Structure formats: C-alpha cells, structure tokens
Image (cartoon, rainbow, N blue to C red):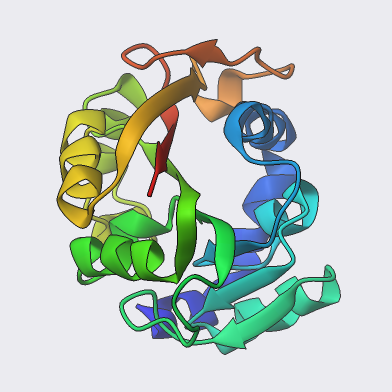
Length: 205
C-alpha cells in the first residue's frame, strides 16, 4: 500500500485543495473531540494535512514521499507501520487514525498498538468513511485509485474492533451530509452517526 501512496502522493494531497470545504468540515468534526493539549500521535499521518491543522506534533506513515510533505508542514515524522509502532508503551496522551484504518492490513493490530502506546485513560480518535453511509456506498462503487484497495468499516464494526482492542467510553460526531463536490461551505458537525458520510469516534483506554 505504501507504494501506491508514494506513486500518487501529489494526487492525494491535491484532493484537500480541490475539496476545501469537505476537508474543513472534517476538521471541524475532529476538533469537537480531539484533545487540545497533551502529546499526540497520528498513525497514518500521510501528507500532514490533519496533524498540522490539529496540532498533532508526531506522525508515522509508511510512505516516504508523503512524510516529506508532512515534515514540510511542521510535523515530527517517523517512517513505519501502524501494526508495529516504534514507540514505548504509555508514550502518548492521545492517538489519531484518520481515514487510514481502511488501508491497513491488520486493523485490529493497529488499534492494539495504539492502545499499547497510550497512557492510562489516553484517548483514541478514529475518523472513517462510514461503509453504510451514502458516501461509503459511493466510494465503494466509484473505486478510485485509492479506495479500490480500501476495506471500509461501518461505525458498529469499528466500535467492535475498538472494544476488542480494549477501548471503552465511546463518543461520536459526524459530518459530510452531501457528496464532497456539492459541499460549498463548512458543515456544522452533529453528534452521533447514521447521516454523515464521515464519522469520528473517540474512545478511552
């Protein structure tokens, strides 16, 4: 998968400029539940679009070319995989996994690794395209260069994986209530899930 993102990293990064308001809407939902202090890690940091905007100082990814862009955006980057994080246990106050989980080979292992590196009562924040939403169904049919290799999750499937990894105390926010091409302003995030295409889940160690 890292070869795919190394090849198309410019195409990936350009999406956020082309789809400004969907991106800002996703950020608005994330900001509702992401801690505003503490040591944070983004697993699958990509080009750093989310980490830089959310104040997450450390990011890990398996794409060297994406990491270069993330570093240019001020993120302290590490090369590696979510299934085997190069950090000691209890190293972070919170960890974010935004979109990335659907591209991982072993999603449960990634969540277990996040659990390991989090401090007691640390938070995990996971953002997904809900498989059961209109947007999830659209992307599954569209089969873009990225999403044709993705394994989408429903919110309930993700919650089950998080519980299996040891997490508890779940909280949800949703946004993207139209296709990205039709969103012309920042959408106000709503609690819960079931209507928005992009869902953010927060849970606690």
